[in-house]
Image (tube, rainbow, N blue to C red; front, side):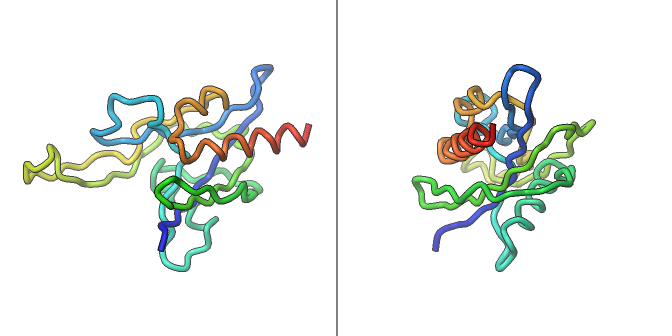
Length: 158
């Protein structure tokens, strides 16, 4: 059975420069020196029968260390990676969302490889608002269709 994750894609309208989205740069040694394809929507796997929106809110909090903003969330869609992994993405207007600091969750892995030493790394090492066109170049490939869907919906609403 395919892995199912859920995430929250916050967006905001910028003064004159279009729409920006909030993305997280993946942490750990593999992603440390990468930028293109190394950013993600804050997301994570569902726990059992957990409703996807609850999982998305929980994962946002776990990864970034802050609660997602209050507001109306809409399901943007389910996007399938080449590996078969499925990500259910929810969107909300993040205007005004500006935490003073984040407290990133951590994970543990053997590092360096085959060393027998386990180290702890942040799941995310930074968070940025970026324009959708810039985000499309930096986001992991499997999540890029979510940006296009958001752009299409926002354009249709204009």
